[in-house]
Each structure stands twice: as C-alpha cells, then as structure tokens.
Length: 282
Length: 220
Image (tube, rainbow over all chains, first blue to last red):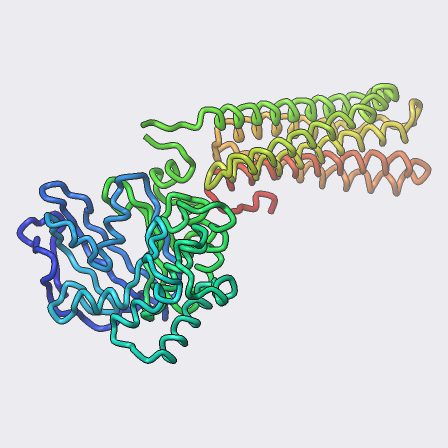
C-alpha cells in the first residue's frame, strides 16, 4: 500500500496516475464492507491546500453524510471520489483513495469505468433538454445498449427505483424540462441509476427543492441504500441527522470527526463538531 | 462570522431561571410542611395543599416552553440534552412538591392535639434534604458532576437515618399499640422525606447525563 506523509509535497502527483490497488478492505472487527478507503488524502488547487490528510472508510449500503460550513472542502472531497475534481486543471493530490480495494488513480482504472460505478447527482436538477425516456436511456446508450426492449426495461426499472415511475409512466416522451424541480431531480437520480452504479454521490441534492420534494428525495435515499452506497453532501444538518448512518464533519479542509450519525448528533467527541451542529461557531 | 445563537441562549437562560424558581418554591413548600408537622399547624398544612396547584401549573408552563424550544430551535447534542433534562428535573421538582403536600396531609391526619411529639429524626432527615436542594441547584447551574456526586453521598445519609427511624417507630408500635395510627403518619412522613431526597438525587443523575451524554444511577 502506498504510504504518504501528510503534507509531503514530494509525494504529490498530478491526477490520473497512481499505484495498483489492494484487495477489498473490511473494517476492523466487523463484517461490514467499505466501498471507499481514503488514506491521508491531501488536495491542492494550485498552491492553496483544500484538503488535509483525510482518512475515511466509507461503508457499503449505508448513507454517509458530509457536513461542514461553506468552503470546508466537502464538495471538493466528494468530487475527488469520482475524479470530477480533475476538471480543474491546477488540482493535485497526494494520498490514496481505494474503491473496493483498487486505487482510483491507478492506470488500470479508467475515469469512465470509475464514473460508471460511482454516479453523481448535483445540487440543481440538470436534466438534458430531451424527453424523460431519453434522459434515462442516455447512459446505457452511451455504453452501447441499442435494443429498444432492453432500454425500455432499464428506463422503467431506473424510474421505479427513483420513485418517479408512477408520476411519469404515461408521459415518457415529454420533455423533462416540463417536470417540477423535485421530479426533475428524481429523473436525474434515475439517469444516474440507469448505468447501474455501486455508489451515488449527492451534492446537496435537495437544496433547490421545496419541503415536500425534499422529503420524497430523502425517502428515496433510504430505499436506495438497500442497493447502493450513498455519500451525500448537505448543508441541512437535520437532513444529515434524518437520513444518514454515518456523518463526517469537515472544517477548513480537515476531517474533524467521522462517526455514527446517532453518536455525532447526540454526543459528539470534538468541541468543534458540537459548536457547528449546535449552530455556534466562529 | 461568529455565530452564538444569542436568542436561543437567552431562552435557555430564561428556562433555567424558571426551573430555579420552581426549585425554590418546592423547597419552601417542603420546609413549611416540616414546620407545620412539628407545630401541628393545620392551617399552614392546608395552605401547602392549596398552593401545590401553583407548582403543578408552573410544571406545565416549563414543559410547554421546552416543547416550543425543541420545535423551533431543533437542538442537538448538549443543547438537546439540556432541554430533555429540563423536563425531567421539572417532573422531579413537581413530585418533590407532592411529597411536601403529602406531609401536610399527614399533619392534618395527626390533628392539632395528637399524643406524640414528632421524632427529631424527621427534622434531621429534612435538614439533609434541604441542603441537597441547594447542592442540586449548584450542580444544575454550573453543570458540575462533582456536586452531583455529593448528592449521592447525602442521599445515603438520608436513607440511613430513615432506616434507623423506621426501626425505632416499629418498636414504638409494639409498645404503644393504641398510638399506631399516629406512629404510622410519622412513618409516612419519614418515607415522604426519603422519596423527596431520591428525586433530588435524580436531578444529580440528570446533570450527569447532561455533562457526560450517558445515564448514571446515583440512587443505587
């Protein structure tokens, strides 16, 4: 396994290169499997360091919430997990991120392969200017699925898994822009599900939604965790408390505390966590 | 930007003041009940029974305030525990006031001209219990488990005195069977003081829960 000292600049590397991964890692003393194991992850935008020595094991089939004030690095961290952060040209990292034991920066692992397994849903619903059907069928088509019968099946299954099938089944050929914000977001979730990922990253998925749509997405997340592992960045602490199994608190690019959600919201170990979740921080 | 939730902190301070007020009223009711018992003062006893309604009302007011604060402020961690224990302490104080009322009722049952002098052990138990109220107030105010621990030690003293007193009263019933009804009222009164002290000890446990985030049994 790659060993990199915290803030060791010599260990930096441009994204896209890395070492071969190790086998599937289970957390100590339990049978729980982890989808991601992050070790001493540092990240810089140019000369500005945004993440400092992050260590985290993200459990499989659980909801992991990431909370923290604006600018704490939580979205950067999320986007690192499917290498979307690479879109910023000045980014460099050190440390390792293993997805099911495999280093995601390994040459063996293509970015496309990673993003097939690690899907993402964004803050603002961003359906394509296409029909509902074509939105959901887009991913499978890019992956070479052409048969109408297969696509029909994938679209129906994905829309059902995203809990929106009943609302749209009679209007699959209508433009997705005609749907409400909450419905559009669930179409985006269905679109992410259509390529059968293992992990779904959600970056504040309900911040643009009204309370009812928010509740529908929250209920959906509870259903989705039976099949997928979810990592969700949220500004809404009550939401983190309601829907997640584990919560990570980030502050100024550091992971301050990562624990069971029940523990973190009832009796956090670090005073900075307590101050933040209680709404008292400087 | 520094965020302190001043309004919420102010509301919590007001809540604490309400609980202190209730604790003081309860303590006064209890002290008066003991005095009335020793003085066979039926009028004073009646007054305590009548005024217990005010304490019940105050308990409801505090519980309503806490409920509104939970709904509006959505507290977590220590703030949430602070509000949960506010409800529990208020319940304990209300039950303590009920025991003051029960002693007042015992005074009524004994009547103005009963043949007994009230055993000094009752006063001794009550004195320790009064001190316990002050210690509990300090523990709650300062959120200090040292004071909470002290309550456990003081409760042991009350329990020991209660045991001694009951043994003595039992012997008296054997020697003075015609006075059983009066001796029973005295034994009941001692029991009410012992229970009063248990509720104060609960307040110590609640302070433990606030500070440590897990439950403790100080009444063992």
